[in-house]
Length: 46
Image (cartoon, rainbow, N blue to C red; front, side, top):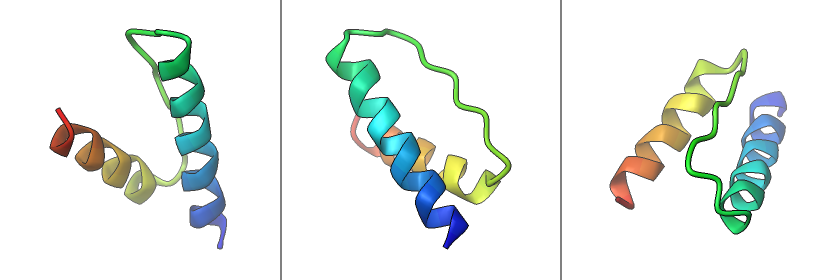
């Protein structure tokens, strides 16, 4: 689905940002559900 593609792309972008030691990353998306899921996953791993 489109949401799955969006989530996969965001996860790859996040992994790239982390590997480059970025401290802040801003994602913009039309899929609020995807953004919320990634944010929830991030907070669970803090």
